[in-house]
Figure (cartoon, rainbow, N blue to C red):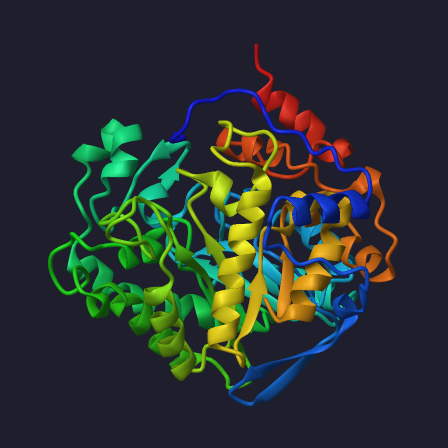
Amino acid sequence: MYAYEKKDSYTFSFTSPDELRLYLEQNGYRIPFSYDLSPLAEKKQLRTRAGALTLENSLTVHPMEGFDGTEDGTPSELSRRRYLRFARSGASLIWSEAISVLPEARTSDHQLMITEKNVGDYASMVAQMKEITKAPVIAQLTHSGRFSKNSMTPHPLFATRSLPFESVRPGDRDVPVVTDEYLDTLPEAYARAAILAEKAGFDGVDIKACHGYLLSELLSAHTREGKYGGSFENRIRLLLDIIDAVRAVLRPETILASRLSVSDMIDYPYGFGVTETVPAAPDLAEAKKLIGILMEKDLTLVDMTMGSPYFNPHINRPYNKGGYVPPEHPLRGVERLICASREIQTAFPSLTLIGTGYSYLREFAPYVAAGALRDGDATLIGFGRMAFAYDDFARDMIAGEVHKNKVCIACSKCTEIMRAGGTTGCPIRDQEIYLPIYRQYCMKK
């Protein structure tokens, strides 16, 4: 599955904020740092078509796959437990994991999927969250495309041919590319799901366009023929059609958002947001052009990311230990994500932009997050793996009381469980629930 060979791991050996700051300075990292943590507590305004929402601070929960729904896509008790933990975290905004818009679009039999039959279950879960927190809750709507499967058997729907993926998954070469006619049906499917999400009490809807899933893969469809491939205008066509369809059915006060990959860092012509001349080198020109168009369509919230968890996961979630040794120090990955966020936020000062990649920094993440907020590198800072591990991370970060024995250690065990087909969480910090699951799925003899 991975593009690199599995070897040993990096270590995180910093013992104090001063030690990390000095290392960053001495090695020329363009990573901000601030001992003043007050930016973390700053309230932020999030625009909608009806006005603005006030976010209570500058820390958010990223979308994180749990794969603990029932077979019909309903949140299970484990799902509820996880989202209630997020609600208690102190974060100012909570972004749900992927919620499939169609049965064939799920990455797992246990991926969430909202339907007329189970919308009441979603409403109940969201209501429980809102008894705990004022944080808006975003529903992430998705079509898994290339990574669709059920019962752990792939049933992919390819948006385009991708030599990099097909070189590591040879069986993919025999899968046909999905037709224009099928893609034509998707705006209606997304609109139906958006109506249900709003009915369930979600405060916003995310049209997911990242990490190689269907809409993300279409952004990179340079070699696809027909109206959804080739030119920039064709490659963004379906995403814009879906946004138009969703916006038409949502109330003005509902947030319209996107989790967006600004660069796949996969060689042209198979990646979005890369140069044509230097292999896999990021070029954010098209991403910025797209964001400008999205903002004209009243999309005001972007949670940015880069890379693909299926091909180059060290790009989108810098780690110490994973499926392969990264070809760079993980701090270079953190730096790249911050620099990309900086470039986008500078280009669009009025965009509410969530920065990513901070969980790798463990107990020192607040210092870098505060520096990024101070410097205008992002509007908000998101945490995903950290939210799995540390139940009240945002509250403790804002208070300047982060506990070393509660932070994410970037060990990739949550991802390891997911790849093995289990329900995802942190077996290190949330052992009562997830250590038995890790042993069941990942330590088989």
